[in-house]
Image (cartoon, rainbow over all chains, first blue to last red; front, side, top):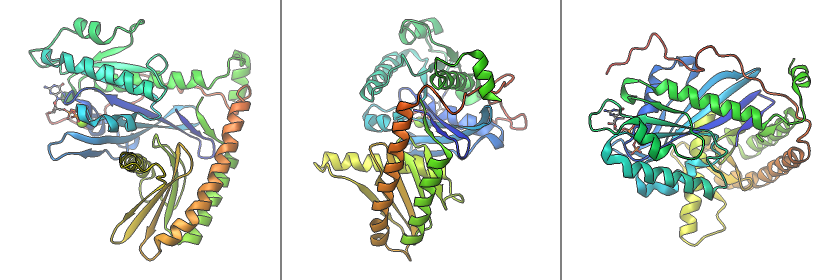
Length: 212
Length: 164
Ligand SMILES: Nc1nc2c(ncn2[C@@H]2O[C@H](COP(=O)(O)OP(=O)(O)OP(=O)(O)O)[C@@H](O)[C@H]2O)c(=O)[nH]1
Ligand SMILES: [Mg+2]
C-alpha cells in the first residue's frame, strides 16, 4: 500500500524484484545504482551471505518528481531467491506496490522460474494481495547466454494470466534492458496509484480545478 | 487507497516524538510501517531514515517470527545494544513501528518507559486517520497528476561508463 505524506509532500511507493535464485535481481539494482544520476538515488544496501547470495534483501531508494508537487520515493527491494528463504520473501513483499519478476532464460532454469512465480502468487495471496491488482513486469534476463529458451516460450510459461502483461528482455550485467524494465514498472505503479486515489465521482473539469 | 497523513497528523506525531526525545534522553526516533515507509521522524536526518526504517521493519518482523516459533505470542519490542549507541523498536499497532535511537548515556529502562505512552498516542492519531480515510473517500484533499517525463522517469547517467 502506497503512502502519502502531505506535510512533507512526499509519496512513497514500494517495488520488489522477485525471481528464482541467481536469476539476476541483485544485478538489476547494482546496475541501476551504478548508472542512474546521483541526485536520483540513495545508497544500495545489500544484506548478503559471503558468497553474494541475497540473505535478507537489497534496498535502494530512488527519488523523482514523478507526480506534480510531490517528491516520489520509490523504495526498491530484491528478495532472496533461494527456496529456503521464503519467510524473508514474505516479509519483503509486505505493502508492495509493484513487482518485477526476473526470469532466468536458461533452459535448465525453467522449472525454477515457474516454481518461483507460483511462490509469488502464493505469498501475495497470503497477505491478501494478487497480481490481478498489483502491477508487474516480467523481465527475461540473461539473453546473452547460449543455452536459452526463446522469449515466446518464456512468455508462454510465465505470461499466461489472461491479459498479457508487459515484458522486457535484458542482459543485466551489461545494463541492457535494465532501465527499460525500471521505467516500465515505475510507470505502471504511478498510473495505478493515480487510479486508486482518484475518486470515480471526480470528472475531468473538476479534476483540473483541484489541480491548480 | 494510499495511506495518507495530513499536515495536522504529522504535526501531532512529531510533537509526540519530540516529547519522547526529551523525556527519554534519546537522540532520534522514527515512526515507520512494516513495508518500510517512513511516516515521521525526529533527529534521524543525519542517518538515513529510509534505510533505518527498511532495516528496522525487517529486524522487528524477523524477531517476532522467531519468537512465534518459540511459542511466544506476546512479542512487543526489540532492543539492540551497541557499544555507543542502542536501538529500541516497539509496535505501535499491527502495521506500524516506533524506532528509538539512543546513546548509552541514556538508559533502556527510561526509553522503554516513555516509548509505551508515545506509541499509544501515535496509535490514537493513526486511528483517527484511518477512520477519516474510511469515511471521506469521496472528497480527497488532492488529485494526483503525473509529471510529463519525456522518455523514461530514470535514465542512465551519461557520465557513467560501465566497466564490463
Ligand atoms: N551472463 C549473464 N549473467 C548474469 C545476467 N544477470 C545476472 N547474471 C549473473 O548471475 C549471477 C547471479 O546474479 P544475482 O543478481 O546475484 O542473482 P540474484 O537473483 O540476486 O540471486 P539471489 O540473491 O540468490 O536470489 C551473477 O554472477 C550475475 O553476474 C545476465 O543477463 N547474463
Ligand atoms: Mg540477490
